[in-house]
Length: 113
Image (cartoon, rainbow, N blue to C red; front, side):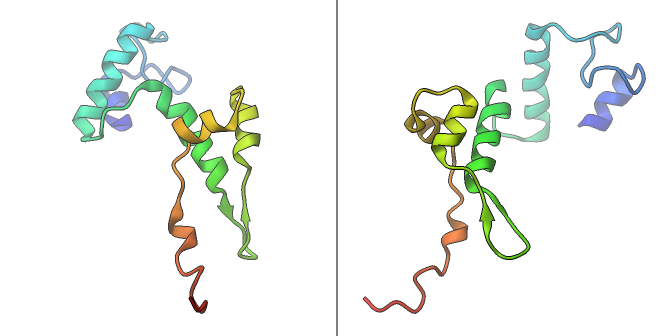
């Protein structure tokens, strides 16, 4: 989709990704309309613009990144809440974080119940 956008409106490397017809930044209302058209054309579930920033950011920080030694480097929900400016970590966990439980697969293997 980015390549298609660049073909449609290209004003040079330093231009905004989604420029207006003159190569300037798009007005927010027009950007929002175009954003939804892009999602629809790409077959992506419609999410609000806010989800692009906070949801992905918070999820990636809490789920962490696997290090070369096998450990997972991550932040606690409280730390992420502080970064996002939330008063409690519950808000962050409830609305912004989608836990990746695949890291827990096999964690109880070998335990007897």
